[in-house]
Image 1 (cartoon, rainbow, N blue to C red):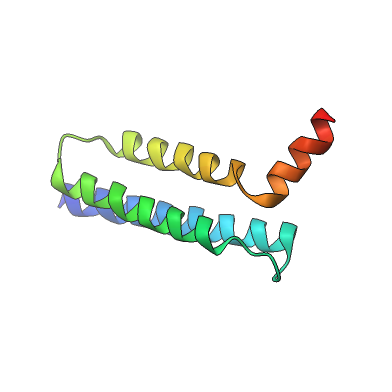
Image 2: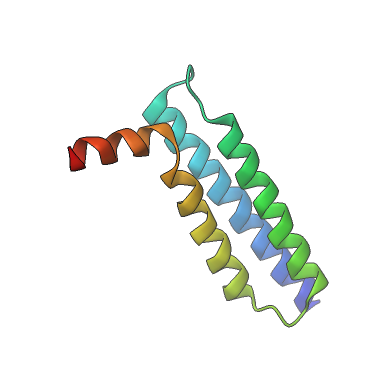
Amino acid sequence: MKKIMQTLLLTIFVILTTASFSYAEYAAAGGGSFPYFHLGCLIVGGLIILSLKNRYPRLYLSEAIGSFALYTVLVALFTSPVVDALKTMVG
């Protein structure tokens, strides 16, 4: 029961994080230049972390959530609006 509950919590976190990434990118870049590739990478990464959590029961829930959160930040860093904002800050 504990394993199912942890997997469910991780799934909810992955879905909410992916949805917030999609909303933020749509609000920042608009519909014309939405980063579908980055969204796909985020979905595949979430599925991989979920499968690792199911496969290895000794993987803590906090580790899985933390690794997906860091992965989301990494994917978001390489989108167009963030790169443009970094260019204006530096230059």
